[in-house]
Image (tube, rainbow, N blue to C red; front, side, top):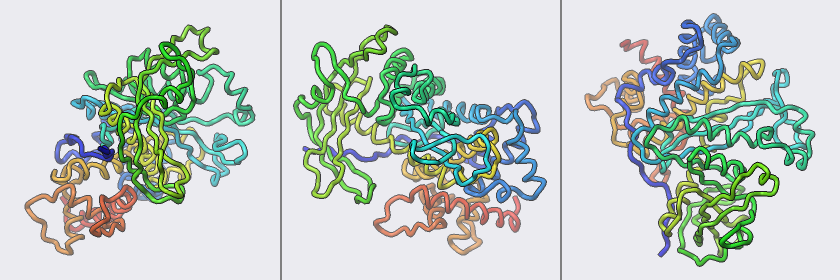
Length: 475
């Protein structure tokens, strides 16, 4: 029997209908920049940026005075990314209440400002050979175990020093973890634990870059769970001595599964038939960490291999997953694989931020002004991301869950070419489909769910349509 691993529907995220009318006020309530006027300006500017995601500050604002005030907001030293994200993190914590288990997905993205050479305070990004400049952003988003975005748990934005580019790999390896860029994984773990409500289990998920022995140890100290994709073939100690891949690969096949592989690297999407093996292992502490008295770490390993890939496959599926969550059966292994498959959601989120909100097109002059601006756009990107996925998890809810009255009235009237507004509120599924169609979604029989790209395009058009309707039908 071949088990099929694919996206499942989730328990709906409960929100009060009508909350969406002032969702940014709700998301940023209790924000404290040290000045009530700054607090008001922050919310006002955020609303205008949310109404026109992807537009520059001057395009989103009403006039020159409004634009100047918004630029002044980001220039003010009281306006920091940490203060902006703090109330959103509290809302994220509130939304996570009631879930028995959630996923905290970490990843790094590079913000490229090479095309803005006059920007001050930028640093090297990309490889040593590249001449790109910009900023590094490491984010953690909380999702349900089947992929509904709950909110941003942590975000750190920094500029690499120029001398970091000149260091060799050997020199970087000799640095203590606190001085390495990879320390970002440990910092994010600290911040995430604070956002998770009592009574909710969290599994922190990372790609192969997160295969850091100190991260396993830090998770043990914080008493939180990890699920990462192994990169290094580590030494394994008693009761079985050897190398990680050899030991896991020697186990009997527990079963087979079908994993949906998305299209990438000029290869079409496909179904991969994989074998699954699992076992408990104890990772041996590396030599350079033994003087710190870091103990060996017991974990569970799951090996996912596509042993007979289709002809022409350049890179067969081959995952070695390490987790602190017990894997005692084939069903447990399938569940851990399903959790890891949600990791790509952080990449989609970063795509929304960069391609949908156009965070790399900002004209702000330096890094200090960019950080709070990026924080605002990060919250807006989460909302657009959530808007895409709520359709899949709560399709029959009234669209007042996601739209203000004047917004769904305008959407209905525009779509039906009629000024008659029905008494029955359309569903989330209907409204998001109409929004997606505004963004170019064709809604053909086999087109599936609308994606984030057509949603953010449609949302921008809807903002203009609903604003126009307010002129003729004021509330």
